[in-house]
Image 1 (cartoon, rainbow, N blue to C red):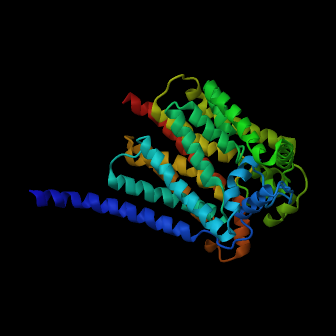
Image 2: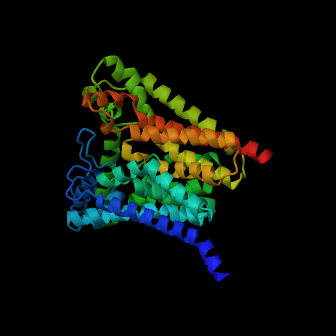
Image 3: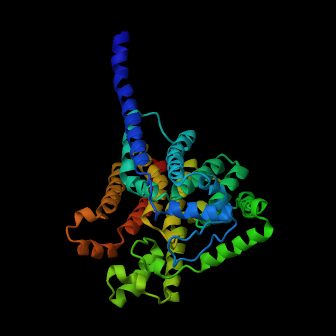
Length: 418
């Protein structure tokens, strides 16, 4: 009897070992992708800016939109311990921090009871999630970007807000705003949901974090840093919008209405100095507003809503911060980890009708194809690949993820009726 029970348990144990092995291999791969000796990645920008900050030297230096430090003085202060050690060691430490934070996201998904106790389903979910987002994760680690940290902070915002811990959620959201400003979409969402206490605390804590660096630099230097930071943010050269590496919705519209009519080769768009016409900004704003209202209108009208609907809202917020952000480079698509997680969770563990599973699964497969197709190895002729860049496939990946979330939201009422 005992032997029979042990035999029955063997497959479950094997699957658990398989999960541990797969996750470990990914972690090792990420570790070896840390860019030792890299001299032109985002890490180098953080490192040199933090060293300048510690010396109270100029930090916000315009460089034509490339390799500029566009983060708050608080981030320079927070990163400064890594700037005190040797650069190679600092790279390893920064890479390891990001890998740990990546896995900590799943810990908080587990804490929210979002991962059912079905080992085979968990394995397929993790495998599929890394297949869909692995490219973005490795890109983020390779250049030492900050997007994994930012994504982790916003996962914490979701975790604390759902558990009605407003101060902790506001702290994490304020910290994220010290890195980049596009999490302001989360703040707008909380205001529209009438979570005024959480929104107010976020604004208050953001002001506190902006002033904290004055403890080290003094008020005068800190205010000068803040002034330089805002000036640099406003002086974004138009070339970064036109760049073929920018996959945002605004960049796509600029390509359609400015770059394409100019007849320039795809890589020569960086030479365009013509500012974006107001009609492009107007179209971008209207499209963003329509996408936001289409998804969130019904949920914003409710005071109380099911937990699953809250999760879908957060999944869409992670997608929208990419779509609405004027700058969305390949490594930024690491934010799709969260929406993909919820999409795959519905596919593997949700009680959905076959037609919805086939539709959502088919669109998810299409997302994988668009992710992998953006690769030089599929184009023997380099010129063909550059022409292919005009299609901006990562943008279509984001839009497909948005469509999937919208379909899941529409499918839920039908399932509830059953």
